[in-house]
Image 1 (cartoon, rainbow, N blue to C red):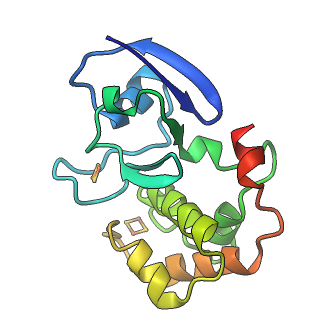
Image 2 (cartoon, rainbow, N blue to C red):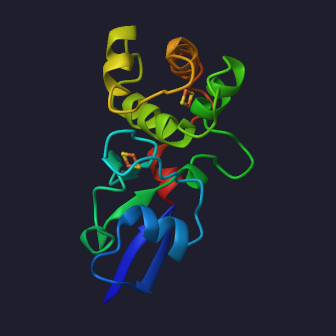
Length: 163
Ligand code: FES
Ligand code: FES
């Protein structure tokens, strides 16, 4: 079946299997391998992308269900050569750690800061509670998001991101 959606501001249209998951559509059909696939149980959250600005586990949604919607992946976080403050924050505060869960963490953080620019620590921890850090812990991830909240100046506006 033919499926069309907007991915990182670009309209894409592909012939897909009706059963294809969004995570596989992004990774295998579009080659956007920044979205990671970390479990078979819909638990880890490493596959999170934004669909119409809302964090979604892309392993729980069919590509066909996403037709007509706007998807943002980690490849769409930076504004040209300018890193999103969330990306800068993960660099400044060493939130990268394993790097594998990082794309989903960063997209969830972006969505949080878009709707709530100055979240407290509890709110940040609740926002990322659907994502599992298996390697180290959440302290530097939380600090990275706090850094981004404190340095919003480089954040492109929603309109600019979608332009
Ligand atoms: S790959 Fe683990 S929740 Fe999607
Ligand atoms: S930072 Fe990715 S699993 Fe811990």
